[in-house]
Length: 266
Length: 286
Image (cartoon, chains in turn blue, brown):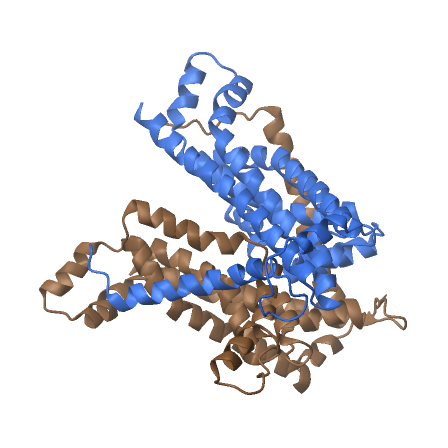
């Protein structure tokens, strides 16, 4: 089928430009020597150097990595088992269980933010690292479950059946068949979850407290106090980091798909 | 193929099911229920919650000033959804009909901005729309404009930001839906002397409906509750539901009223799902 209307191709090109131009402009401006306005005053790395010297930005980076690491790690520990349990118990998995599992991913984030804020304040849970990690897990856990379940659905049940026929216990099947086959999906979910948590603004904004400022919160407060070239540099770094994480996650999931087709053709 | 449903799970699987259930119950379902509960309470003297039942918060949602913001948010989200559908369809069609290799490349290209930081992407538009931003600089340089235009903090800047933020949500389900349409159907239409536009009108567009519905929901819901976009690109004048809720919670500290607004948002979202769920089931059956 090679009969794509020309106007469609033109439109597609424009949509792609629309998607990428702002990001390209942002990255371009981060190398602009001019500290005011957008006129090009020569190439410089000085804004990046300034970022490097700024202790509050380094602190925010460390906070972000800790929060993303812990919330992703805990989500993986709970999520992989949950995905296996839900997928293998189709009989009793009622539709509402599935709905509760995806609902955190599809309701407006601000709802999650205000709802969690009220629970934390009313239960007198201090706002800080703990509350942010819990908040991120509310979307990170369902994300892990969705990705791992998608992979489980593609696994050939013959592998597990064969192991059981050969006398493997359910523990052996889990650790020696299911988990190794799931490994690419688990890595994919980990990277995606890490990146989503690293990027989250809305939930963090509501449930964060003093001393637990993450990078997105830092960017936000910098934007509020006036636009500077450092923000462009910091934004550019964040764009590149999340692109890297997502690209890697994409690669893992792609590999998991090819592995699945190979294993089923054996 | 007989899968044994009676398979007993190893202990860790049972434990994680249990813990995940408790976790989401405590930190997802209970908080949402709390929003509803607080929306029926009164505001305390110093901004806390006084547990006195009242409908007052919901009456205030219907107040003309607040009602306007509510309706405007629905209108903005609706127009955003429409623009995304119109702008996204041709690209989605090209992606669905491209070769495997091209499809993967295009899919990756659409996904990348989708996963880059939303705040940063919205901020990029501030750089473009600012008085001394890219767009004004270019317009003045080209001689179209003497003075910089006020582009930031307008309806247009909010729209552009929303469309930019949520366009991939529309494109991806559309690609899935269009891929399911057999190219033979299109060829059959051409064999019957349909023009290109007639073919699209009578074959591809009607059959892409599930994609439009799924994409529409995925764009409409976050647009309705958007907070970053109206905050950064709309400023204080162009309030939307998201910015109003934030203000009630963090600035005015009127939690009961903020909860009523939040529950209104959630109700709208759930109602939309319910309605679409019914129509799409009806469509599948026919």
